[in-house]
Amino acid sequence: MSTMASHVGVRSRQITSVSTLLAILSLGLGIAVSVMALSETRNFVASALLMLTALLIGIQGIRTDCGWNAAMRCSGTTSADAPTLAAHTAGILLGALTTATLIWSIGRIVSLPLTIVAGSLLLFGALRVLRPNTLAPWGWKVRRHWESWGSVQYMFVFGFCIGLGFLTTMASPVFIGLLLYSSSASLATASAIFVWFGIGRLTTTWVIARRDSQSGAHVSRTADWVQLKVKYLGVLEGAAVLAASISLIVHL
Image (cartoon, rainbow, N blue to C red; front, side, top):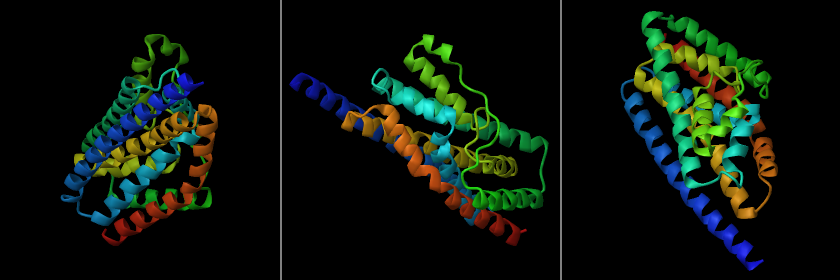
């Protein structure tokens, strides 16, 4: 019994240390990109609110099938170690930055009027306030047989896929509005928005990994507990994007 308790204690300290370090590094990246973006944006309030919106959408990613399964697989007793957590973190952030670059590049070719962008955000925000728990009705699922690559490689690819934001099920239709806004924003602003989305995605996984390692509870119960806690964030997300859309409309 003492040997088992000692093993749980060592694992708990390892997961806590790794999760904390990854969180600090990720937040540092988010803050650095945000400072760069907000220093050059024409609408500080709207950009800051949409970064907050992206963070909230990312946190709600645990409510999707892929988000729940990614947290389960990354936090489970068989794969929760430093290399796996680090690989998953890198995969999500790389996926988020890939989407930012892709959407920004498309925006250089097809430029949307700011009136359309502001109007779409207003519409999506209103819908989100009225239906705060709605998921987008589509989504590709990461292939389970890829697990044969090994936990580190698999969780990196899993992270990249959900970090893209649009490949798997979207936690909120408002994500489409973020894509539209990012196509008309600077690369720094687009990167900041999607990095915060990635950090939101990662936050629930870090919490689940730490809580599970400390309590010794089965990871599915921990993931279900976190999933239940974030279901009320939809209203706050809707309010944030509505405020951002109003700010954009005022500054047209």
